[in-house]
Length: 338
Image (cartoon, rainbow, N blue to C red; front, side, top):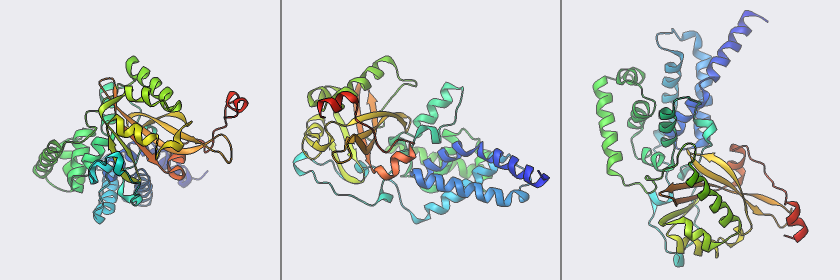
């Protein structure tokens, strides 16, 4: 092996060590799982190509964040803000419910925890990281101008010093502090639905039992049992549709009318956006067994489900979460003719 090959391999290893945290940073900046991964790949390519110009005046990590920030700011010049349905429209009564899709680039996208949350032995650090990828916080970030967004993430989430952020952005400490102040004020003004969602890490016994009851209710399509688990102001969303529903009567009413084909589904646990979630597989009458349908993200508070968010799009989400594209029917179901 030549020296050049050895150096290249060593650089690849050093760059890869930062992939997960950089993906988390780019995801918070862009609100899109796929754009975040594209941004990190672009960052890695730029770093690899210009490494001979890296003079080591900052750490490799700081240098990578500078490149990633520039990549994200370039991607955000189009001005698109990722959103949730409740950020765009008023809640719709069930009687007026209609499934109107919007383009993919409208929506805040889900992300597997494993792709954005680096392993850490510090419980406080882990808690901050999880809170900072939850849907409500991610939606709030999207309301900030790109540079304020970068400052807030670097200072509040990643705990960088003001001087480090100023150096990264090529500005002054005073400018960074001012941007942070404005960003905090903007977030404080927003009443984000779902912002009160809380889940222990790991889930406490009460939360674990709540999820077990939810799985039983959903897989059994038992609307009475599901109603008992939902907060009175619970929200249900279904991107790419802009419809969102509030309250157990409308949510369960939808599930037994327009959502009736979901009866008999199976749920597989996933860790998504720092919250509990499930991959939902619908019965497949043609192929048998179950086919991918949605990634569900659940928001929990005070022993009830406050948010029930279903991201529909089997061609993108299930591969992203490394999930199988088919589930076989269980033996007892086959015998019963289910």
